[in-house]
Image (cartoon, rainbow, N blue to C red; front, top):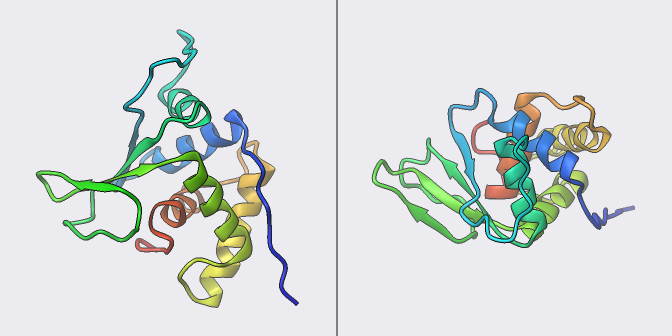
Length: 151
């Protein structure tokens, strides 16, 4: 039997947790919100709040893979920078699709990766600090690349 997960929405808090955990100490990933027009940004908002608010307002964010060496791993719109880093434009729909792939195991990968990403998704879903950096980075890789590139 096969079941599928439908993700109807993600909260600001869930996104902030994902982005904070994925980028804190990451050597390969950084995120930017190039469009801030129309966002209600508070003085106390951290950068992850701004990224999440941009997505929730319908603006894409830019996720940069500094280890890419010019290799493009995804179908997402992208640019290649002067140091061969690749920056992907990621929309809210891309995030929802990636989360669904993690939950359902429908990204490129073997059974052990699928099993592990399901656990990562469950930790993401639980929130409140249940997810660690390798799990958050893995979720971001599925969102960005549809596969695990960096383990």
